[in-house]
Length: 296
Image (cartoon, rainbow, N blue to C red; front, side, top):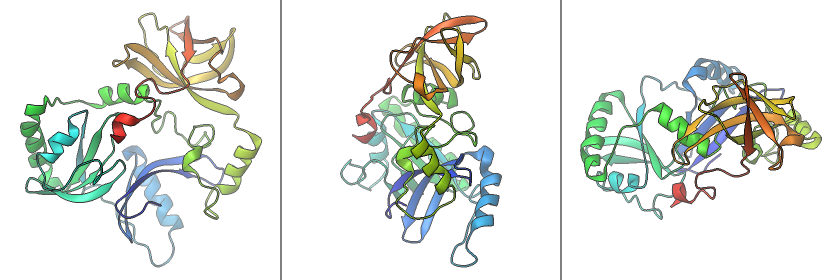
């Protein structure tokens, strides 16, 4: 778990060692954690935590109706945030994956230094009665920085260029953490946890599948998900999600393939609307592969 004022990314496993949650865990202080996950699985995760919670010493609160948020991202995100708060937003004082309370104008907020875009950014969480005021403050002050509104389709395009998976597509209870490329977030040194034995077997036996990013010769049509991935006509995997990546100007697919085929030299083809479109393995993220922009 993170130190106070810090954030970690934390997958959750079931007893079979499969992914049942993909969370951002932020630690406010020694005893208080904020856990952010996918809204579609919220009730399921709450039932899970209540079922496994200790009989004493832990309280679980659902903040769905008590916490709402906005995200700002891009090269001027820090300048915008700094123009609205007296807190020090420098990279030294507020580094990547930090989490703290600060006033944004007159609005009390919890701010996390992360985004789903791969660029410099922040997630800002407030009580619902401040939500409209926060939006107005950000948009009015952001005009000087060229702020524009962006929705989930734009964010989806950006996360594909970072090879970041999303819940219910790349991360589902049929995949293990090693198959999904999340092994760095699973510590086998911290003692027992649900799914540990199965995770050890997956690591020692080798993952059956590998999650890969493919650049597609799309011929005018992007993937939608569930298209077969072939090598020399043989089906060896399936697309989980994809779309057009506007930064690099190419079509991208994320897919699970048999682990042995996850190499840069494999001649992949994806069947899109009956056409077998060539696809090239991308071994590193296509946007900012070193991750410097979100850490700067």
